[in-house]
Amino acid sequence: MGYRSDLTRAQWELLEPLLLGSKKKPGRPLKHELRQVVNGILYVNKTGCQWRQVPEEFGNWITLYFQFKRMRERGVWDQVLTTLRERARERAGKRATPTVAIIDSQSVKTTLKGGTGV
Image (spheres, rainbow, N blue to C red):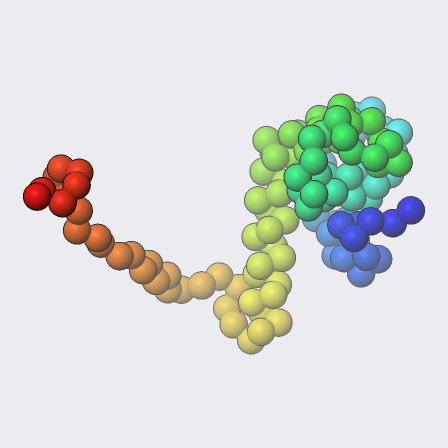
């Protein structure tokens, strides 16, 4: 059964080298394919469900959480998002990294005391 959060073939082909290239130690092989593990992680992200509630076809929830946590600690997700953003900017004819940032803020006057003071 496919889920709306599952990666398409094209998305996986783009993401796979980024995820495999970040692997530093061979370690014990996963029982489930990396793509299925990532689909499970994306399922949790998309639905907001608890890790324990992930459908079993993604694999054991403990494995999914451990892999997510390990990737997060190693900075894999930050690197993936940076790479995807840079590629999208280049496809749009822009530099890979922005040269200017604009910060917009609003100041609101408040009273020191609550109420209208009447």
